[in-house]
Amino acid sequence: MTASKGVSTLDDRLTNWGRSNRGAFDANDAARLTRAWRTLMPRHREMLRMVYLWHANREVVCRRLPIPRHPPHLFELELATARSALARALVLP
Image 1 (cartoon, rainbow, N blue to C red):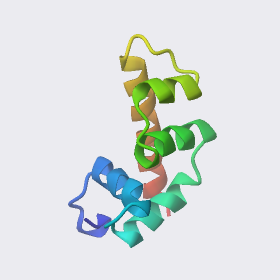
Image 2 (image 1 turned 90 degrees about the vertical axis):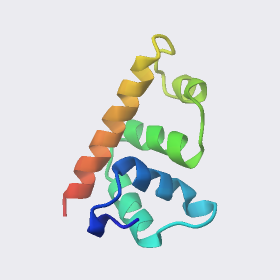
Image 3 (image 1 turned 30 degrees about the horizontal axis):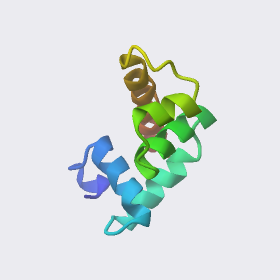
Image 4 (image 1 turned 180 degrees about the horizontal axis):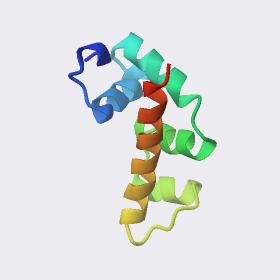
């Protein structure tokens, strides 16, 4: 599940990062994601933290980050934006 092999998707890597406090995970990849995550804007950091580390559901995330709960695609758009920002941060040296 390492990024160097190019096998993992970003979602797989984020899931691995979320498991870093809960059990089996790839420590090197989780550390790389954490370094990239720290460079993100606060809103993106909080979104990814709540979804992948806390496993918070959509309602909780929308309430804590002022995201309209309806229509539901607004949450998905915010999550996609945060994931895209992380993907860009991972590409940078």
